[in-house]
Image (cartoon, rainbow, N blue to C red; front, side, top):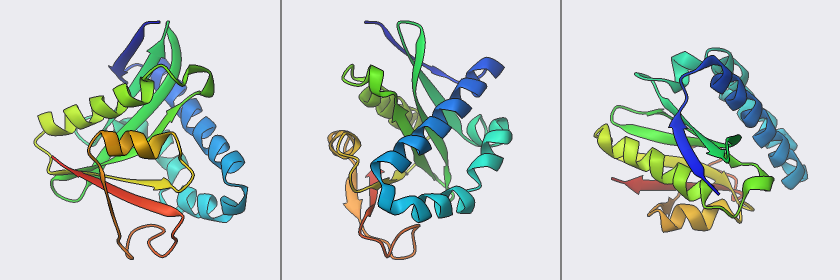
Length: 168
């Protein structure tokens, strides 16, 4: 199986990413039925709909980046990078369709984002995840991310929200 990772530049890719982002939030609603209010608050606080409608302003240079995964030419996964403070970035919305899991796509996406952050001279990659991300949390650890606590971060007072960072 051929996995290809590319930076999102074309309008049909942007549309595919928008669909994958909403699929990701649908996935979260199924996995975390007790956290619908938290998910809704995140969608509102982060203005996810607004960011997606202005995709180029948030997830293309110079303000961010988005990587799209293809498996045998099917669009199956994403990860987004956006600024976090002056010299850091945040890893957002890593998602791989369940039909494509087990092919190393999440690892390849995560590594692409980390490599890009290094190439740009960033200091730290930050991320938040939810506590039952049993596929993602070990992957993040294997990429070198470490856990931290921050009561001021989104969900900082909720033990179900996991905060991680990778010092580059």
